[in-house]
Image (cartoon, rainbow, N blue to C red; front, side, top):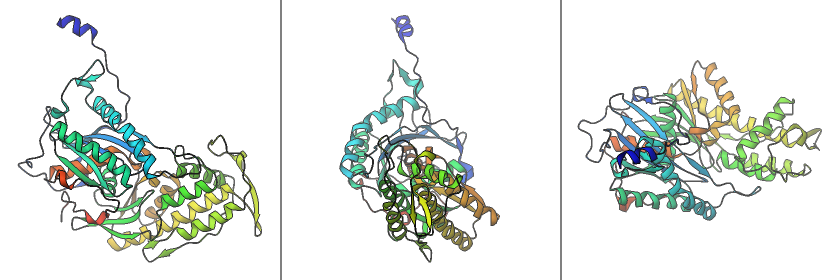
Amino acid sequence: MSSQASTSRKVFQPVSTASDGPCSADAIQNLPLPTPPPKDCLPNKYGRIVVIGMEGSANKVGVGIVEYDSEMNTYHILSNPRKTYISPPGHGFLPKPTAIHHQAHIVALVKVALLEAFSKDVVDGELHEDPHNLISAICFTKGPGMGGPLQSVAVCARTLSLLWRRPLVAVNHCVAHIEMGRLATGAPNPVVLYVSGGNTQVLAYSNQRYRIFGETIDIAIGNCLDRFARVIGLSNDPSPGYNIEQMAKIGQSSSRKLIPLPYTVKGMDVSFSGILTRVQELAASIPDQDNSNNKAPTKDSVADVVVGDDIISKEDLCFSLQETIFAMLVEITERAMAHTGQGEVLIVGGVGCNRRLQEMMQIMVEERGGSLSSMDHRYCIDNGAMIGQAGIFALQYGETTKMSDTWCTQRYRTDAVTAIWRAP
């Protein structure tokens, strides 16, 4: 019987969603781990602390598995699959259809993440090991975010906690972005620019909290980009911000015009509503073109219109919008660097993928004799591993969440979280 079983066994070859190697815990200079470990911080069958992180605060739902190796003192992302809800062109993503999307994919994502992370325990395409023996805790996004999508993922996390008899760890979405960035780039104590669809903040660490030095006073930068993309008819696939970035490159490469737009910096805060109104007005003057195929913009898609004494196009507007709003962010980030005396900047959040933003920030920090830490779409864009990363820090220092406290909130300030893993 054993020989028959061995000959019928299939080799499992998972699709890789986490190709990077382990990251050194020494680089980020957290507090030493408690000895003995907290009672809820139990190693799995391999003697390692492994958590599953679940994210679903906006239009992306993801599941990541993060492992801590005490012998090597490293953290390692074992798997990190995700799915994106893409709304129809010209429309944003609404809470109800986004929540339905997350509900449809979350269970499959959990299975895929487990199969990839523990491929040596897979037989005939199935995990032949109780996850109770593989997972130390279940981490999930408590907020901020959209209510329906948050609840959809939280329900799955609660179910797995009861099924696997493992503790829950509620995670702040914003702090998760920062902790993932710190570990992935090895930046121990940077000034942080957090830019995403729902958040725009400049932060620095002090006394076990991430202090907000400046932020948007109206809409987030990602929301500004998304709304403008709808006006000019750009596709939501893969994202509106990405398509604006490609259109802006056309404007930049063909010596397009930098159109004067409202530049609103108030102290350490920024405002994007005025500049959005202005570019929407200008965009409304440009003739529509056939965009039914929703392909990425090309030079052939340029549509010009005379505004004042200038002939401008949609590409000009994308280029000008990016240059202006990114300059605003660089300005307040530089002020935060000067105030804190820090020489390093870390960019996190979905908009942090933008290469032009990274270039502009790089110029500023180099002029100050500093350095920039940035990432690509794997870790800037919402993902489950970042929730697992912040969650495993909390777990290792004794923080878990009671089932009665696993409610979600759409408003959860970054500076409301005590970072118990960092020095006071």
